Image (cartoon, helix red, strand yellow):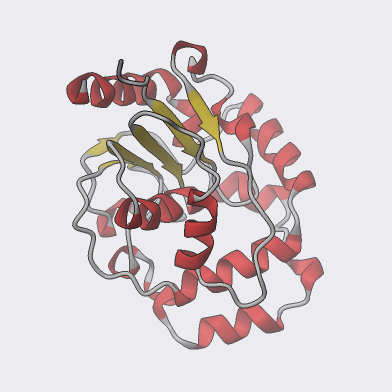
Length: 220
């Protein structure tokens, strides 16, 4: 008897399973991968492989990666067999970054910024993640309060040093047309959502879950 599929979810930088709280995940066997402490100077691909070692699945694996978690999902999908990959509000490699994140000196800058500056003020995140509902603004503030500045600093440096330029693995890539953090014009999407910002994972749960279910059904 074939084992049931497992949906493995990776949230965004500084976030956790709260971003999936409106997804009907009770309908599918799933695992949310919590962040683990990075090693000093660890690259994004190396960290992704350590995260992949924590996947607990007997049957086919479907990856769902959001923002920073989407970048990790790209690396995992290139190094271990997966049945499908869904990327949300993210970039698949350097060609899809803003120009500023491709400048070599950005990595050195991130190392020198004091730790206390690594958690942006709430008003800035409200603008960057807009449009946001009142519930989403509250959730952003809760996540902000629980964010580890040291982890954010490591992650930003790892993203700047990430050198993936090509992605051969088939992936669904869903992006908001009003995403200010990663503008859609640079992103090779499969689904572009009008009026959605970077917090697409929370603002459009039913739409995203339907796409996930279609991907699983197509595999089965």
